Image 1 (cartoon, chains in turn cyan, yellow, purple):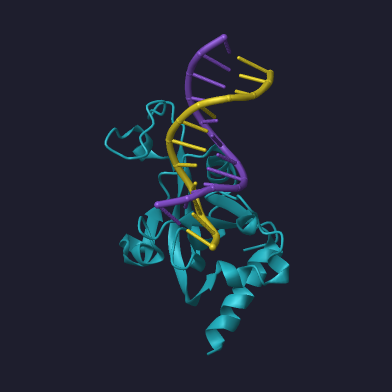
Image 2: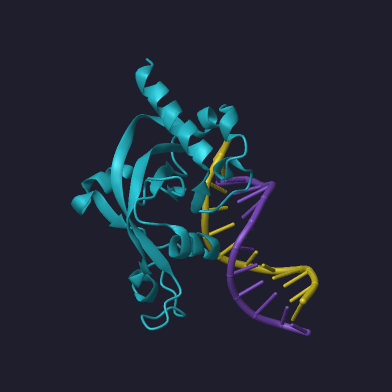
Length: 163
DNA sequence: GCCAACGTTGGC
DNA sequence: GCCAACGTTGGC
């Protein structure tokens, strides 16, 4: 990790794929398939680099929270679920020769001792402008500033050390 | 190219 | 389950 390293956050509904599922995956690694939003796709396809750290967020959860940390272990490749007719994210406009959707591979790095709930995150001044906390924010893959990333890790460590 | 209708996301 | 916010689609 150097000064140009980018930091990220991915959202997932734990009922669909949780951080526990990532821990249990082969090599604790998974392909981040199923993203069907152009802006999120562009971040994965164009900007996520090998080694970039990624905050792992559970949405529609009880409670919704940042639950851990992962890392980009493979840069973008076409998402094969996009041309799989039997996949719930099938897109007839995407083909192997002309793929429309992309994915990166993420490897588990850490599960926080205690989840950083939305309510907690909203109380951290350094995160006041975080994309995740913006009203109406729906991006499932988003950049996190270096300062925000550091603040999240610092808070995670503080929470882990408290009762 | 506008924009209304519709589908989805996700906090609550 | 509700519904606000947002992205996408398609008629014109």
